[in-house]
Image (cartoon, rainbow, N blue to C red):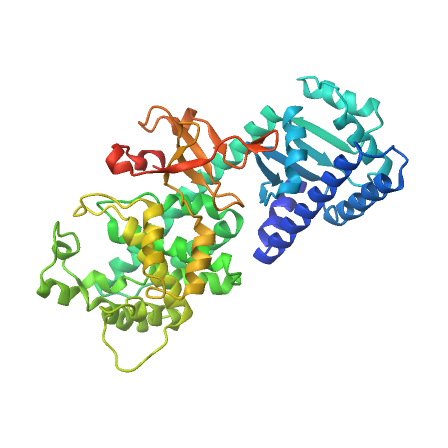
Length: 476
C-alpha cells in the first residue's frame, strides 16, 4: 500500500517536461529492442553485431529503470504504450509490433538487472515458431525454462482489459473535473449578481486539478469538450474554452503556474456576459443591432469586473478585454496597431473553435470538428497567429475528437482519441448509431497494421447532421 502511495506521489510530481523526456526515452528503448529482434534473424547468437545491439538496448533500458521497479511496454489495438503513456510509432516499429500481435502478446515488462544474453534469448524465443499458452502462469513458466527471468510477457486480452479500466477511470475523473469547474464558475457569477466579494480559492483549486489532469491525460478531458449544453451554454462554453486553452498551453510546454493562470483567464474570459439579458444570450435567431450593442460591451465589462476581484491575475483582465480583438469586426474598437497578449491569442483561438462547434439552439445544424478546423485554417492569421494555429491543429489532430469517419473497409468510426499520427486517430466503430456502442463497441486504432500494411484507412468524413447521427450520445 505504501509503495503504491509513493508511486502516485511520484507521478503527481512529474512535470510535463519530465514526461516528454520519459516518452522519448521509452521510444528509443523500443527502437533498440526492435533492432535486437531484427538482428536475431540475420546473425548467429554469438555474432558481435547481435550482441552489441542487445548490450545497447540493455544499457539504455537501465537508464529508464532508474528509480523504477520495471519498464512496461503495452500494445493496445495497434498503439504502443509505456505504462499508460502513448509512445509515437514510426515505420521501424511495424515489424516488431506485427511480431507481438501474431503471438497474441499485449505486454512486455522488463525488470532491473537484466543481462544482455537474456535479451538475446528473449529475441530468439520471439523469432521461433513457439506457440504461447493462453494461461499467464504457463507463459511465465515457458520464459523461465529458457532462462528469461527478468522479462514478463502478458497476453493481449489481459492488457486490453487493464488499459480499458484505466481509460474508463480517467473518463470518470475527467467528468468530475468538468462538473467541479462549472460549479466554481457559477459561484463567481453568483457573487457578481449578489454584489458580494468573490473568493478565488475554489476556482484556483479546480484549475490546479484541471492542469494536473491535462498534463497527465489531455485526450480524456479534451474529449469532454464535444459535449455541448443548451441550458448552460455560457458555463459549458467557458469551461470548454479553458480546457482547450490549457491543453494548447501544455502542447506549447508552458510551466504549471502559467497553465493555471491561462486556464483561469480562459474560464473567466466571458464573465462580462453576466450583465447581458438572458433573452439576448439565448435568443433563437439573429440579433438586432441594438442587441449587438449589449453583446459588444461584455469584454470591457468583464475587464472592469475582474480588475476589482482580489487575487485575480492581471492577465485574466487583459484576456477578457482582448479576446474579441481580431478580424474586421473586432470589439471593443481601439486606436492604433496593438499586439494582443499571447494568452489572449490562445483564448481567442480556443473560444473560436468552441463557438464554431457549439450546438446553440438557434443553429440549424452543428458544424463537425473537422469542418471547424477547415474554417480556422481558412481564417488563418485572423483569430490567432499562424504558429498558434499550427500548434492547435497538431494538438487536436486533423480529425478532432467527435469527427465521424468513413473507413475504406466500409465501416463508420467516431474519433475518440488522437494518436501520434495526426491522420490516424483511435475510433469507435459504430454499428447501431444509437449511442449504445460506447459501452460495448470496439475501439480500434487506425495505426494498426497487418503484414506491414494498415488494416484501415480514412476514406472520408460524414456530416452527422446529414446522416442523422447524434454524436452527443457517445460523450455524455
